[in-house]
Image (cartoon, rainbow, N blue to C red; front, side, top):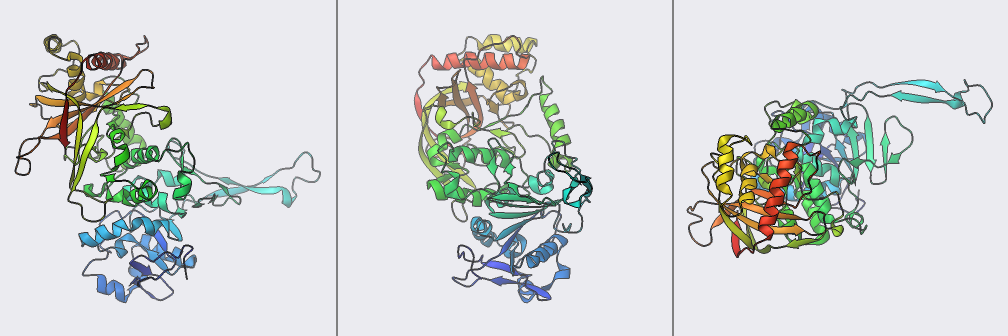
Length: 566
C-alpha cells in the first residue's frame, strides 16, 4: 500500500501482520509502503534486541508472547490501526554493529517523518512495563444544565453533558506526557518533533496529535495542536520544513538554539549519543538552509553559536545557590527524583568531551542558554571580532550529523594572554587572603578582568544573572590563560562584550608540531551595568566586575592571533 508521499520503507521493519509469529523483514529496492514507528523508553537491561546471534530467529519469526510488554502492546496497537509494519529501533538496527547503527541512525529522520503514525508509549518506563493495561481510572458524572433562553426540564437528556474529573498531581500541572520518564529521554526528543502524527499513551488518557488538531480522550471536540514548552512555543509535531520558516519573524538558528536548550537537559544512557540523538533533527534543519554542520552548530552562525553558557544558580541568593538549585531539581524533576545519584553539573564536563568549543563540551542536565533568545535576532546587532578560518572533524563514522570523536576550530581574533593563580583564591570577599589578592592584582594589567575570570573559574556560584560561566575541570595549578574577543551586542542597553577563556593544551604525540592547541574553559560577558540599591550582594558584585572589566578591555587595543581550539 503506497504511502502518502510514496516514501521508501526502512531497510528493516517488523512485520506484525495477522500471523501467530512476527518476523523482521527487509525492504526491497524501490519498495514503498506505510509503517508505524514506536517511541519508547528502553530502560532496564532488555536482551530482546537485533544482533548477529538473534537475526535468524527474528527473521524466521517470534511468538508475540515472547515480546517485552511495551513492544507487545505496540504490535497490538499497530494491528488495531490497520498497519502491517512497525519500526522499533531495538529490533530494526543491529545493536552489536556500530557501523550499521551509524547508518540507520542517519536515516531516522526519514523513518519518523514519513511514518504513518508514531506510537508514543509515554506511560511505560521500560521495555518490559507495557502501556495498555496500566491506566489510571478517570471518572465522569452527568451535569444537568439549561440555557436561560430555552424552556424545558433540566432533566432533558439532550441538555446533559458528561463532566470528566481528572487528577493532575504534577507540580506544574503539566499534561501527563510531559511529566513522564519518556519526556526526559534524549532520543524521544527528535522522535516526537519529527513525527507528523503521534498517538500518546499516557497514564491518564490517549492523546492524538497531528499538525492540525489535538484530540484528547474522552473529549469529543478537537483542540488546536499543543506546544512543547519553550518560549516561544513550537508546535508538536513540527510543521513541514517550508512552513517552519515561512514566517519572516522566525529565525531558524534561533529555533535551533531553543531546541538545544531543552535537549541538553534530557537524559542519555551513552555519552557518545549526544549528537546522534538529534541527528535526524539536524538533517531536518540542514534541508532548509544547506550549510555546513559543525558538531552541533551551523557554520554561517558559528560565531554566535560559540556564545553558549551555563546558567547555574537560578533565582537563589548566596553561596548556597548550587545546593538550592540541586535540591529544586531533585524535588521537581522526574529524572532527578528517580535517580538520586545524579547531580547538578556546573560547567564543562569532567570527562573532557570534545569539542570543548561546542555545547557538546557541557554536561548533561544543565541549564544551557545563548544570549537573548527571547528577543528577535533581527532586533539585535552583533559586531564580531573573530573570524572562522577552518573546521575539521575527527572520528566521524557515518554522515555529517552523527557522532564525532573530536573537532578542531581555527579562528582569528583579538587576544590577551593573562596569568591567573587559581589554587589560592579565597571564596570569602573580606578574607585577609582575599583582600591581599585583590591588592596585588590592581597593579597588574586588566585587574578586574583577572578577578572576574578567577571567580568564574573557581567560584562560579557567586555570580548572578549573567552569561559568564566557567569550567569545573581547570587544574588549580594552571596559570596561563588566553582571552579572545568574540562579539559585542551593540543595540542592547547596556551593550555586552563576549570573551572566550582558553587554556593551552599540553603537547603530545598528535599535537607536537604546528600551532598550539587550546581548550575552551569559560565565557565572560562584560557590560557597563547600571547599579540599583535593590541589587543583592551577588548581583552587585557581578555587575561591578563585569562593568570594570568592560571598561578595561574596551579602552585598549588587543593584538590579533590565530587559535586552534579542540
